[in-house]
Length: 373
Figure (cartoon, one colour):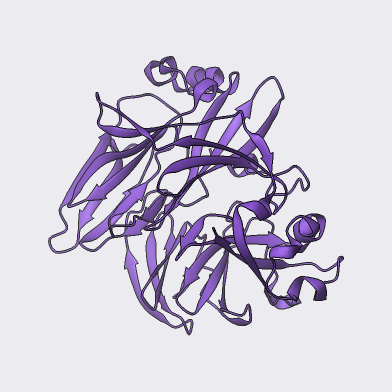
């Protein structure tokens, strides 16, 4: 059961912000607990950033991508992954198309689907759930194929390999780590609930600021950290009226539990990333009274959390947008339609003239480098 259909609006529009002081600690679990705040005042996007640089992404008929495209950063460029159509394109830092990494198929260097993409140095790892890991050079050359029993999501660490199986898996654990040197497996987060398997198309794993690995956990409001071959709670979110009820986790029947969940308000974490200065979380909230889903973002700047939602100017979604922070820059991938609908709201912050050269009826994408204040 994938949540692709729940990923909604993404635009550089008018943002709704609310701030709270540094996260408090729950002494019972010793995990920072962050309160999600719905009440906030209107603030222009231009007031929370110092500059925006726009980079049009080169597209042609041969290398077109679908609607749900995911962004991955490289030292000298970026990747765009169309997971649904199993396409992975490499671009220069200026948005110029360079080459395709692998292709759909069952032969050498081919994958049936793109589960995850991970950039390690100058190597690109593509995880083809559930059977293999493919390692490519940035030139598109296949360097290695590792046959593996992969989970819904996969990630390499310094000492081994993490797989996320989630709730509803038959492994007995939601996360399994396989140590590289001896192949020994360690299971974490034991399956003690009868729930339907929830797998996100969005990335589950990410590098933390200290070099370890953090990951989100399906229905759980807690982000976990993997360090020194152990898993511990890292950050927990109090979603208020969107918190999933305890009765959901203790239900003895997975389908009855799902019916209860989908008939109520609920919230889940669908993305997380961080740098030395910032933490960034993406929430999916379902409001039954409004009969709609919405995405909320939380940004921690070292002293307080600020919450914002993107305006309902565009109904299509870019789930890979606004999910990467590097050196104080928040990267976002946007359709040209989104930019043209919202450009007047932040035009004074744009430091190049690329937006003026984009025709309003153009198709394709633009990478936005958003420098935070």
